[in-house]
Structures are given as structure tokens and as C-alpha cells.
Length: 203
Image (tube, rainbow, N blue to C red; front, side, top):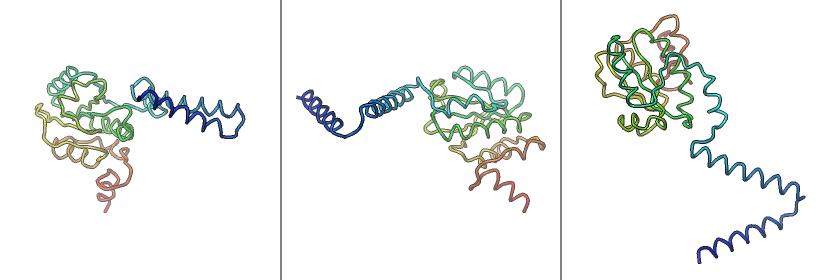
């Protein structure tokens, strides 16, 4: 019965579509565009296609950020940072996440600014599911932090809160920024952003 209902619905849609007065060429072009849009949307959802923003992501300066594809690699980088007496920041995100893409260039610049005191890692939650599961990631981007002794601190950052990210790096982790690169870190104006902090310093 359900099959008959679907067939009846398709016939009705087809009859309605064919009743619209338009040249056959235009009708064909519209059908092709609709099918193409639906197929690409399905492929993106399955991870087999990218949009324009994803394609251009590789063009961004990744700074000194180390991309980790597994929990094992994350743990390896944490041990390496501990031996070098460095704090660690981990960015958990995904290519399809707009806020994550907006944060990448800022995060990359911060990796240069704090290069002497902190190691910056990035985890794609789709590629490194074991790492994101272990970290109990519920939203993206989410930033976790480790002190220089290797201990994870409880506080985390969710979303584009650059001001809080910098505050944890400088206050909680004791990381000092390179003065010559500090002014390069700019975020969209708003509560807690880098621009606000810089304006307060000038006041």
C-alpha cells in the first residue's frame, strides 16, 4: 500500500511539473540543476565531497599547529611537550564546521605567537574519532589545555571565544607571547575578543 502511495505521489508531482508552461530545454536544465544539488548535498553529508570553503582550507597558513589523526598521536605529542616543558592546547573541530574554519587562521597565528611556551594541536573529530570520544567532545570547536607538567586543566573553551583562550594561555598556563607577533592576532569585534583586550590596554 505504501508503494502505491509513493507511486501516486510521484505521478502527481510529475503531472504538476509537466503542466507548467516552459520550453523543454529550460525544463531539462532545471531538472539537471536540482539533481546535481541533491546529489552533492548527499555526498557532502557522507564526507565524499567538499564545498568551496573546505577546498580553500588547505590554502590557510597552518602556523605551527600539529594535526593529529588518532588518540595515539595526541598522546605522543603530549609526552613530547612535557619533555620540552611546554603547555599544550588542543583544538577539536571538523572541516564542515563553519566556526571551526573561522577559528583556524586565528589559532594558527596564536601557535606562532606562543611558540616558545605552548604546543598547538588540532584534532579532526571525523578522522580521529577515538581522540574526540576520549575527550568527550560535544560541540565544536572545543579547546582543551594541558599544563607544562602534563596535567589537564578542567577549564575548556567552546566556540570562538578568543579572549578566554588567550586568558587561559597567559594566566592559567603561564605562557608568554612573542611581543613582535602579539598585534597580529585579530578577531571579529565582540565580547571577550582580542580586539577588546587590546583596546582596554590602550585605555
